[in-house]
Length: 351
Ligand code: PMP
Image (cartoon, rainbow, N blue to C red; front, side, top):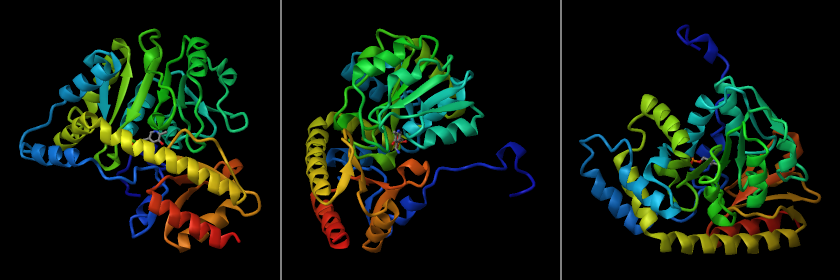
């Protein structure tokens, strides 16, 4: 640490990307929930074309993207705010909307805790019930901002919309953030609740179903008042947060819905087949509405399985914290060929 660093940043706990870096070295990467499919050819062409204009600053409002998304969801363009990945939106929300604290599941996307700590937000980890988010546990959060990933990660389990609505209506003093990173793989979106309730924000990403994790693009949808507040924070800190190539890529991805739909269908089919095969091998696997599976073996520890796969250059995600999930691994659904290799290696190893 240098002597110039502000003392409040002396003991940061950055997001652990070590496995992600490792998985780039010729591994089959089943650890970060990306799409195994490259972006559509139309996306590649559009980003190349847009690169010709890189001498100019990009559109800070991402107007074309906002227009497109608002028409997809029946909202106004002013209700959409873009982030450099949905992580940036989450950062804005923890930064600007958690004066009374935050509440989120004790087992969920680990970035929530990291952001809460960074912004000095007092947070409560709300326990899960049999690995599921239970709306009745969110009845007494006293105006804290509630973050719910639906479907949740790493469990993969989705909540019905009625339960999300229950959290929203039982907490009129709280902003409820519904993080829908994986919603396209089989859950019901809370977007339709935005017209009805002023205390809900829905966060989405292009990183999963739309094959654009490396482009960094996410967005938020909420009532106009909330969106304007988020936009103010964004325009104060990073007005040009979405570069021109990413804007063009995102727009082209939305316009090639057929490509996205086809890939989602393949991933869902491979996911369900893989789940059955894992169950046959003695794994307990949660019911996934995502592009990943969360699985533990009846006899072999999660760590052993993680290490065995790693020897064969297959990375999955193993969690040690909290210890309640240390017997599980989270397995991103890869291509059918990658999952075949994964299953063969696993079968060879747990005989
Ligand atoms: N929310 C959840 C639940 C996630 O799992 C992730 C991806 N790790 C994100 C948000 C962030 O995605 P991105 O910043 O790539 O949009």
